[in-house]
Length: 121
Image (cartoon, rainbow, N blue to C red; front, side, top):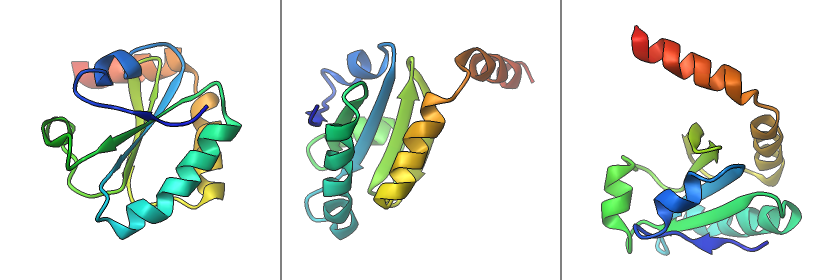
């Protein structure tokens, strides 16, 4: 599966589904973003069960502001609608693969319990 362009119109719908969604926040003028783009695209081709979305921060400034994006590229991982990873900086292919496997291995019941506990305190 190739990457999907995400906008204010389709962002929520895309990340709130079941399964894993990886989101690359980028801009055309950003050198590290351009370097990470092919790595992200290659991963999208080898993981058909994951949704890979790209958000152009120049085109989607409102969405970037709402997500508090202050540095690009930023990679976010959502699983079953829950943000489970967010980090600025381009990842090498091997690190992206490790991240994908880590997100796949999460016990989402435990993640939801931890979120609930942190919101109570």
